[in-house]
Length: 396
Image (cartoon, rainbow, N blue to C red; front, side, top):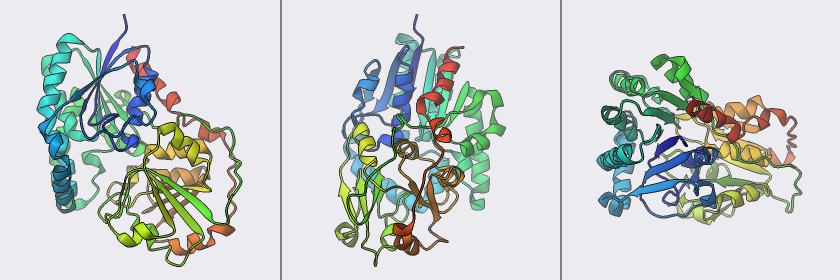
């Protein structure tokens, strides 16, 4: 008889605007095609499957309808204001929009514990409000194995000393939830290191993201005189956001030889940025079309401008960039895990926008000749090599 696993997620295709948050789960599901898989997620605005529907065709998906969904734009506006004022506070206490839907999640999980009868329940976060469900699940069924999937850090990722006491108090709550679970998956080394002291080491597993396929060739011919830089994912001009395009915009005022192409959902309010000749904005394209498009550029960009979470950040797109074998430019505050890997394995350039002159870097970029040498270190970053760790857990 096939083992059964129930995935709990805050969002899932086709109701997500960013593939980065769900591609990890999709790769899990695809790797578990010999298992009986079901997903419970929230129904939001429809964006599409990004060409990935066939990889989850063997799974059953239950989308939770909610009245809140009708007011998502208003709710997101409210949270954007609250986030600016109390970002670390609400993050530690896991008060996100999914928090208001936890009762609906609980009802659906309770139903599935009786009917579907999963052997494992995997809860992926953020949103961390979903981790609050662990205690309730264990009260219903103590035998079901719970796997917590940390795509980002929770209370431990807040490094500011002014939140020390709040972090310490609510950190105990996080520890309680962790101790009620059976296995912990960590997407980055930093999260893994932060959680080691909270749980038995053998039950904490570093299961990193990775690329889907590795390109066979990194040879490309430049079709124009300008340097082309591609970016795939969410972008905004929000000074409080994770990916503030103004960091780049302010460094290109005199440079007309670099062209940026942004693919994905853009939230740009500044008309000068929208009209800038250095920038072109395109809508989302399918996941595998994205992989083909990446190979057309001279460089691929990772931008992270939010400081408090920088040390643990390594987005899923980093690994997809690796698979294209196009050199990577990481622009951050200098301590992102992606930036460290770029330096360690000579994958491109890692820039601290608070220390380096981005204007000088982009001006001199045309004279730089980047050579990507060793592929052996890259091949180990395959998603499916990493996912073997999850299969090993479930084979016990």
